[in-house]
Image (cartoon, rainbow, N blue to C red; front, top):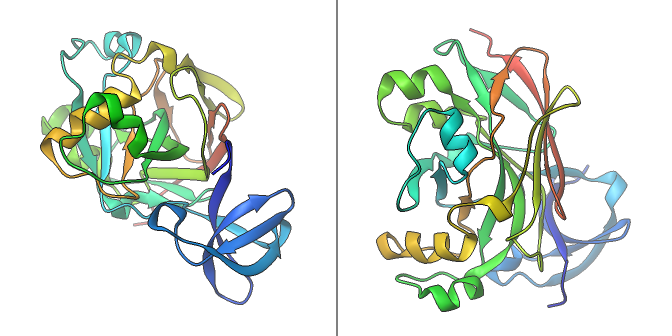
Length: 259
């Protein structure tokens, strides 16, 4: 597989949804997700006629907290000695261009722009030296967080797990160097977060190896690698962009949830 191939999942006017390889202004449709062995089906469609949907369907969304020193400092928290793992519910996934719903239970919902890692080959107790062999590619992730609930609950599952709280996309890109990618978060066009993965405390290879010591990683699992400093509130009417170098811009809208 050549470097820097782009893959996504797309909805078409005939009601079908399929994985595809992006080839210029065309989509080469696949029989399944590429990390699950999907092959080219022989069908092609114009990119302009397709709607991107969430490019991953992971069984597990594994997230890393406080993986940038400056973010740990802005949270008033210690830098962890080992990767700090929490999980987001698969039901929190959101399509590119989708709507993040602000739940009535929270008075402060914040954005966290992150590099996402898609596992290509599963395994348990993966050695550090071969960890990158288990990575398929990279995407952009918004780790949306109900900050007040995170503090009041004392653990993070509810605060991080609301429906729509994990936008992902727009595509999954292979062949990137995850150790020096610029990660930016913009709200209404204004840059709030601007960091680089070179500043991650625990790089991608270490995350993959460490997580696999506890649980089997499976092809298609998603790792959200932590966020740079600059997290802040989202309010009704905002537009959030997560811009990961080499991946592209993931854009979603923010709305109050109707009750």
